[in-house]
Image (cartoon, rainbow, N blue to C red):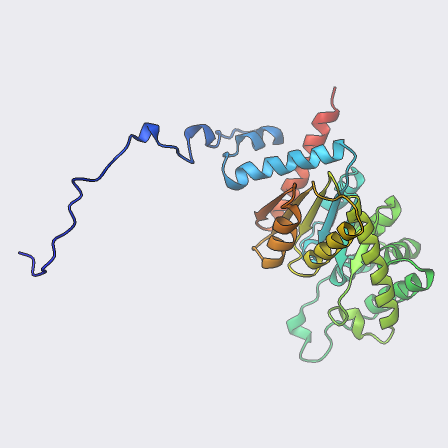
Length: 321
């Protein structure tokens, strides 16, 4: 006998309904299809479950292919981690295929890309050298980049163009692996958005704050011009958690303030974890008046080659007779 003064609730009067009449979010028609050896990428995409990213990823590929087909821009903004995990060849392949209309980097991006062009290697062991004060003191990195930035400011161009042209003129041994050198060769606009003090080249004797500010502000205005032409296109944020999402949102408000119609476009954020600013400044707010934004969480070294391969495949299919 229970010692409590209350009795358990009686469920006998509960109203029920038929499972067959109830709306449901998941059905077997939405399930993944069995995979088989030798599947083509297009078949792989159709085999994904029609749920969450399994539905969103093929849709993004389709939207990007449609933007390419319509001659609309596919802008790429990215953090330096994408470079550090070895994805330059993948991005260069997209650039050569005409699937990247512009590239936007932070200050770390030009450092790692330039070191790769110069020496074929980058990303020092910070923990091993920070105690001695040697972190960031690589001589060639500071000299080449600061000279290029000072020259860019003198010539009235941006950091992206200035560094890319400096790499080409320097004929460095690994230029074919450089995003900046490739963009300069293909005449693809590159903008570089710098926060003073965040990059190792700012501690070098040759650093010129006025030149850095002037050339980076030139690139911001150039980025705004690119965003003003984004209607019907796409903006991809690859691994930038703070700086480029903030730059993108400011550029978007500038162009709308100036009367440019930029409402219907696609955005996507790729990163190994979800961050506030990409979620709000890239995926949500910019597309709430007619576009669509997507989130894909995963390792760059897997997700971006997958995206590139699927996009190249989709565009190749459209050109086949």
